[in-house]
Image 1: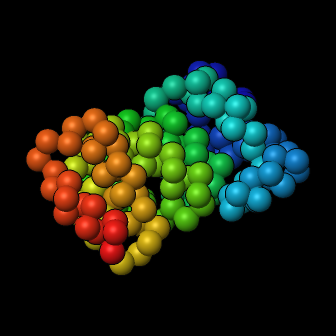
Image 2: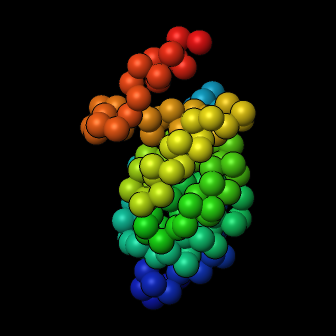
Length: 159
């Protein structure tokens, strides 16, 4: 990467670095899991560690619609900087399984909007969106079940 410091990174530079990290073997493994990128996740995490938190760059990387760039964006963003509408839009755009998983686990769970999104997503007709709601519900049942209608949740699961 040619940037002088992590804060100087541009989308073009990051995309060029991700292209250099493309590995056909990693792509083959990832494609078996429904993901369309060929970047080794350890190397991707190393790039994120070097870049550190950069919310503006993260937003711009997300907008590329590139799976590896979106994964990197999720590692360098500030989860609390997104409003509920942005997180909802991002989830609906995230169709690669790893992006979906990281968005829910690394960003939405740390967001102050997780509770309201959990409720809205759990009832969503889109099964991908609903799965995010249920992932958040599972965590809530395990960590803070107070205030949840557990018998009602079991009825929904049973149905």
